[in-house]
Image (tube, rainbow, N blue to C red):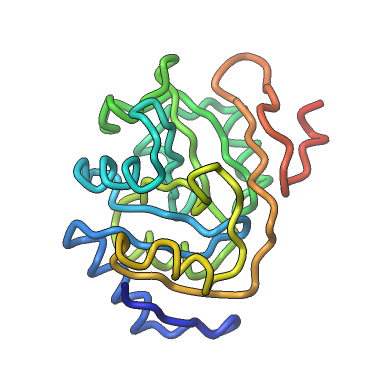
Length: 203
């Protein structure tokens, strides 16, 4: 694994470009977000998705979230109602995962049983720069232990995933709570998980 520590305020562009090159070549990266570290690959890299499931000892029902760069990007990969748009415009970028109906461009293997997907636009410049330079979302899951326990120390993460991941970008400017998950795919919002984001708007 290549391992790079990023400057918290001014992340080095060359390291972001290295991460993008790895993703474009079919590799897997670990990257900082505004919540946990993410473990991800290019959205359309089916072999990479299978590899991530193997790394985390998960079955093929594991749901990934898709990290997009902005609201315009979300429209390409999910069906967005007027209510969903207003909600996301108010809260994103931020520590939320919004459940939305999947667009047809998303590989069906990544749909939930209800044909929905989880969309994220994290409030972290490194993540957003990677996605913008890549040109499409990252299919992502949290970098946790095989028991699902969160990992917050970048050097511990490096040691655990070292031989199974191609590159890691480390940053210490993070919150160590999961994202709040809110389903806005139907007529009424539903709080699935309360995490780092304020969900009082949905009560």
